[in-house]
Image (cartoon, rainbow, N blue to C red; front, side, top):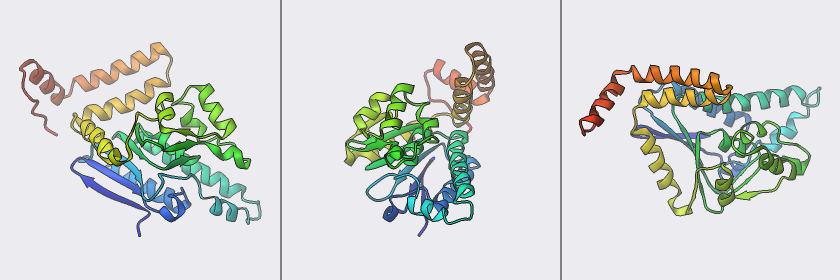
Length: 261
């Protein structure tokens, strides 16, 4: 059984975390499999959008606590193991951001701790009504400092810190209100609504979206004036594309664009 199953529908790839017996925990093997799939997708020019989902009753329950407990058996009480684990988890989250294609989380059941981190690391997210989100490590004495990185870049700092310091869960409606997800939908419409969003994105000029995704995140980390300089250069690069010239001509001519890709 593959820990992550990939299925493609036209220009949309679906990656499904596939270890429902362990609540799709981000174990060593799961992180390795996720990183491998992301690396392959980064080179796949036929794919224009990616959906990340979970098999079974939940999306992802975070790190594998049994595996973490076993890691303490080392001579250093697990320090090297934990450092490596959190570094590799961060690398997977950064790979999502670096992926040329937009990544949409399709969330149901629960998304807790590193599972919530995974949602926050995706470019967009659609969740089933009733889904619970939490960075609840503090409830067992472990403040979710690495999940705090993308969470504090999705929510206001006060709302993010409240979740981190109380361990309280929020539902999908509140997650949408706070900006963690794009929308909450009925559970029986979750996949259809997520795929609708993915196909809408995938229908755009892929090169433009790739340039735009990279520029979106880069400019967000810059001071205002530098952000405009960076974004202006990105738009210039985009404008110079032959397919963009075709898109503008098609708009002016009131016809559909004939893009090369």
